[in-house]
Amino acid sequence: QQQVKQSPQSLIVQKGGISIINCAYENTAFDYFPWYQQFPGKGPALLIAIRPDVSEKKEGRFTISFNKSAKQFSLHIMDSQPGDSATYFCAASKGGTASKLTFGTGTRLQVTL
Amino acid sequence: GAVVSQHPSRVICKSGTSVKIECRSLDFQATTMFWYRQFPKKSLMLMATSNEGSKATYEQGVEKDKFLINHASLTLSTLTVTSAHPEDSSFYICSAWDTKYNEQFFGPGTRLTVL
Image (cartoon, rainbow over all chains, first blue to last red; front, side, top):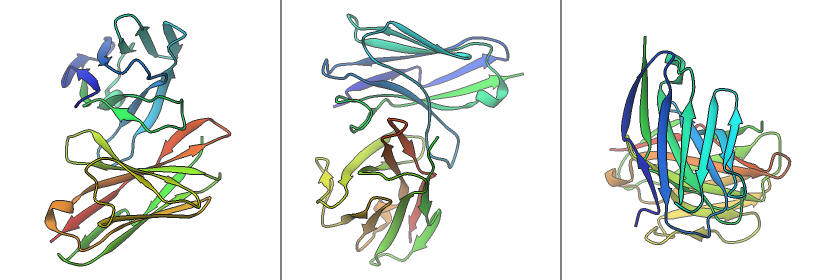
């Protein structure tokens, strides 16, 4: 059972545009929602994370929007750059950062010139 | 941020042999480490949670006798794939929880190919 659903599966955005990736979760016990960036052949790297007590968090060009009632959260990448081309995974856990993560299915982002 | 290493980065072995993968936290102590498996162009699937000094907790469907996990120290966890078969070929990734940064940090992964 996929507890965290992610869309779209792939995304092509022009340089300078906004990339938007969405995730929906089922388990209301989840209390930690990170986003990871993964390049081919590498491990995931944490981009940004949010807890359900806030509706938005911004770090540089990356913003998470969180809708607790809808059980959805999204990643916005502003001013997308070719170097942002990677696979992005949302994830969720219950019990905070030290707990096991349930990952979304991933979104392959390609930023074109 | 904290650094997690994995060794080896790539390994090719014959069917029926055992392979050991190491996961080390280089600049912090990790009481909890996690092992994930990732198939090509797929998501990460948690295999087990490894706690220092105790038995690992395996996810449903993961064969504990096939995937042996040992977390003998606060900086090292090992995953041994026993009697490996071609279907065990995958990308294995570990993560370690750092109390200082209160985050999980992932290793670079190990590509296992079983011939």
